[in-house]
Amino acid sequence: MILFLICFILLLLLPDLYIWFSFVRGTAPLLWSIAYWIPTTLALSTMGLWLAGSHPDWMIRLFFGLLLCVSVPKLVFAVISLTGRGIGLAVPHAATVGHAAGILAAAVVCVAFFYGFTRGWKRLETKEIEIASADLPAAFDGYRIVQLSDLHVGTFGSDTTYLRQLVEQVNALHPDMIVFTGDLVNDSAEELDPYLEILPRLSAPDGVFSILGNHDYCTYRHYDTADGAARNLAEVKRRQRNFGWDLLLNESRIVRLGGDSIALIGVENDGRPPFPSRGDLPRAMREVPENAFKILLSHDPTHWRREVLPRTDIQLMLAGHTHAMQLMIGDFSPAGWSYPEWGGIYRENGQTLFVSIGAGGTVPFRFGAWPEIDVITLRRGLPQKP
Image (tube, rainbow, N blue to C red; front, side, top):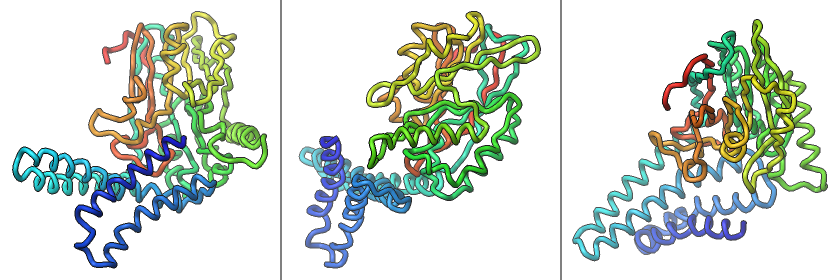
């Protein structure tokens, strides 16, 4: 943690120092010179307050706004400018081209991130997905499931506009079932206070089912008592049940339609370190008929390769967690550096994984990886090649 903080602070300061000594010092008026350091000073100050346990909404937004719209563009400029200077040792005028290219790239990054910070994280989209399996019972051909994931309601603070819109859009889709695949909050059950009358409005004929994500254990904050996280977790569970959601904690449910049925299985978070691993898939499947069509709700997509693929015949797993790092450019996302399966449909050995990139986020920013409502239509038949 300390090493990470040191590296992070260096990434904030080194571009500033390069720009200061190369372009600002001795050329700008005194007031402009002082003003130059204000964004970085504010970013470091708010980061310090955040680490000390202060989490007001305005402070978090200020920090990430400065980071994304000021510090990152400075870093982009510094890297390109320094590259130009390096090439300039052998190629005349390369340094000048590098400075110009750096300014242009920094401006593009600044505009894109400003959009992602102000509008992109609430640019809600509905995605239609078809998933086919020869094992699907005939009565469930055309069955529609809405998947929501990673709401992180604390990021929206007390502004309920976005979640009201989301609930209205989901209900207007008239799905047969709604599933929520974890991370309802950031780190506290209190984040749900503004939404106690909104989230219960989610409705589907076969019910609303949910599981826990790593953030729902409420361990990402300081507590004055040893049982602080446990009490918060208990309250998150209680409130979900009060919403009318069927919270699956290493459990299963049988959903019937006509004379056919499918099994819905839900496990607690099953992640790689440092994320909690409390999932118990064998326990969750204890009462599932062996020949049933099985749908698994598991927050972390790494669970698919660690246990689901090698040890089960589960036909479909629905996950979230990655958010696609809340950044996509075309088909690229930095989430791919950490997760082999980070967004969309993946198939292997007749089994399918769908990873939602989520409808919220831990920070108020999204670019390219717009928040999504996923409408999954089940089809009986052979799956198409991805």
